[in-house]
Image (cartoon, rainbow, N blue to C red; front, side, top):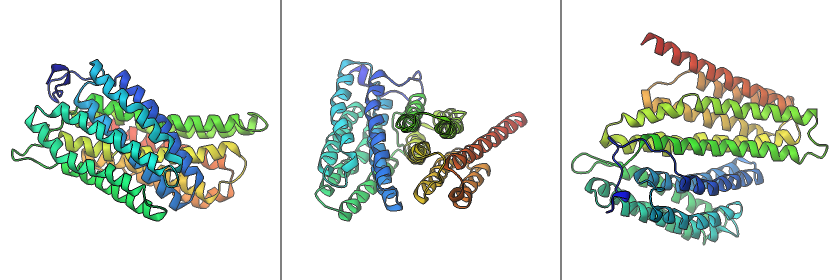
Length: 392
């Protein structure tokens, strides 16, 4: 194996950052995220949210394969690596285009493109780690099960209605099983994946930015479509929805990226793959999906700021906070085995507001109240961190 494709050391390497080729690929996933919001908007019912959740996980899983690939080798270091990613870009775009009708007419297009991109990424990853017996063992534990998932996704696309949904739920379960299989110890008690802590944390933080960016796009598009232009009422709706998006940004970026990066960096070499899986592949998904749910509600608030939100939007708003704050709570538990009370309390307070106050006040008011709850939650979290730091 050439030096440029040799798996990076997780101990002595210099911290890397996301490359231009990875950011270019992420542009396609920006579009995929927008397509998922379209799916959620088309069927704002619990069943519709469930189908959107399934598609979101499949898209997240595909993106995660490239995140793991990019942390094992520097994808921007050579022309061969760059071309390998460029090959996947148009196929990923075809997959994203098919998302809104994936449960209907474009399901075969979605699944076929997904299959080719997923297997291509696995092949690049396998070639990169093959020379190291430890990483080769980890890949061999992971790849066979991971290869089954996109094949079954294609088979499920041949089904119709609920049968397709059920089949694709099985695919999602297999992807989770493949991640768990990859963390098994080998004969030497090691389960080593090449993971650069700085690069891996940055890649996932960028996806959070992508999701928050979709919220801002939804707000801006809704405001620009207002028949009367951006008057005072529309402006208040924009301010309230953007304020909640900003509070979510603060709740994550104030310290979470540094905390998860540090936890990954100090993890023992044989545990690093498992920690990366728990904190990022599994741990960041509810955060991202929560933000996507909020994009749906934010758009509807800006379109009609003075009217009360309907039950689907109130449910989406409460679920968005529950997933986002719950995801942050899960990360904290995974790192220090502790649950700060402010986040669970915020989840309960927001649910109570949406159920009790939401049906009786304009959407702008309920979103502003939720933003205030998140700001208070984050202020308490930072106060607790500062108090613990001062004591130590």
